[in-house]
Each structure stands twice: as C-alpha cells, then as structure tokens.
Image (tube, rainbow, N blue to C red):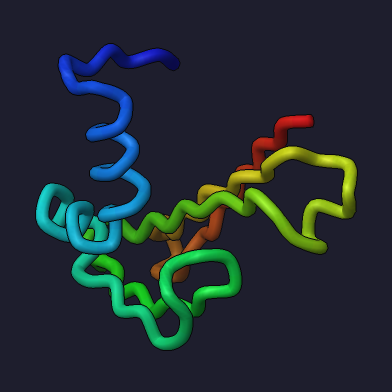
Length: 100
C-alpha cells in the first residue's frame, strides 16, 4: 500500500513516529485510548502502557529491532483479532507478516 500526503517528510515523520503517542489517541480514539511512557525517553528500550479501545477487539503491533527477529528479519508485524464464535465463545485470529 502506498499513500501520498501533502505534508513534508520531516513533519509527517514527527507526527506519526515521534509524536504518535499523543497524536494517535486523538485521531483514532476508537482504537487507542491513551499511551503512557512508564520508563525511558521514547527511544529504544522504552516501556509503554497502551490502553486500547475495546470496541473492535483488534490489536496490531510491529517489532523492528531486537532478539525476537533472530537476526534474520528486518521487521515482523502481527495483527490479532478476537471474534465472537457461534457457541458464545471467542475465536482469536492472528496474522503475522515479515520483511527480510
């Protein structure tokens, strides 16, 4: 997927990466309610607490560095969806996408 934005790269990167913890809860409150930094400065090793919107029961995240990539992948992304099952229970669907 490729999306064009009428915003300079420096501003777009600042908004979606550097300020994402403040911006995303404002533009997607149905998905992310809040993000709180528990430890660190936002850089590598930072520990964050994210409160998700529970309406859509979907959680997505990407690992871009660290031991989980086993030195062979550039990134790995996961999407977890929890759906109702006919018997009143739940079905958890997980998809993984990797690059590298």
